[in-house]
Image (cartoon, helix red, strand yellow):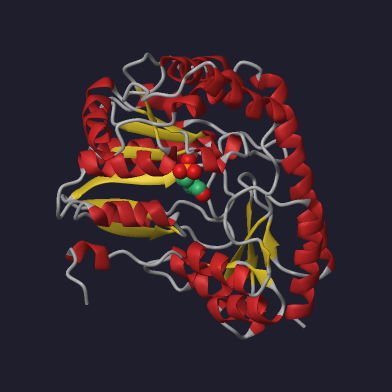
Length: 385
Ligand SMILES: Cc1ncc(COP(=O)(O)O)c(C=O)c1O
């Protein structure tokens, strides 16, 4: 094998890459990867082009374009009544870079980080990449409730942080205020960083309520709360890679130091476009939520029609189905569906470290056109017969 750094072998190949490759090879309908088939809103495209024509084309300040930092501060104030200033916010290359920077800034080799399985795979990888140890607590199907008894057993003097995401990918669970307060109490008791990935903050269904962790920051005396969000999901613009993190000023300073040497800055015209998109946010976001609520209603109805067991998500654009009556593990079922029925889904085994619950669970992304969802569930019905 070609000479390489040992840590690279620690990283797993991503299941999203594998399923998307197979989807292309077998010309399959792709409900696997979490990106939208919807087009970016026309006004957003206009803002991006305008920014280029207005010559926003050179490196942005490494902390982020002041216009976008201001928009992030303003929407947090207006929608959640949380006050931040410029020193709290750093603009990153998507939430993915924010996750990487945070762990690089707080984790030393040997440190442990608590996370919840099923997990978003980037957490696991980013923790390992700085020599840390990911330690999983299971959110069990179908309720995906936090298990504090288990967390108490897993926490130890090496534990430095706890990361969760709310709304939760892949279960679609939205954590309640008492869940969040209990997490804060736990973090406070063991003096842990509490990291909340909130990239799906605006994808909330059926009158559920999303509570940003930062709105409870006063409950955590140690000021060790960090939150992450992104334009990727909110504006159907995953390819723009604009995200942000919010942290206490002293920690944010350290994170910015890392960001300077990882990517230095984020696309200047994309930041300007997103900052302008936030100006007319109220009218945009209601249409966005309604569109996804309809998609959720539609996929649930179609799954009911074929008698398929699933958990109705409270948020995100993912849904988990249960295949325990298929007498085949989810990875093998996913291979069968993509190769023989031209339908790509995500088998959930790779979202777990400890539990084998993932062997009977499969994830659907319903951020797709209506006709794609209809054809997909038709193929699922055929594949399960
Ligand atoms: C929970 C979660 N966090 C972060 C990301 C990545 O966000 P970004 O596109 O902003 O890097 C995703 C994308 O699927 C996600 O599901």
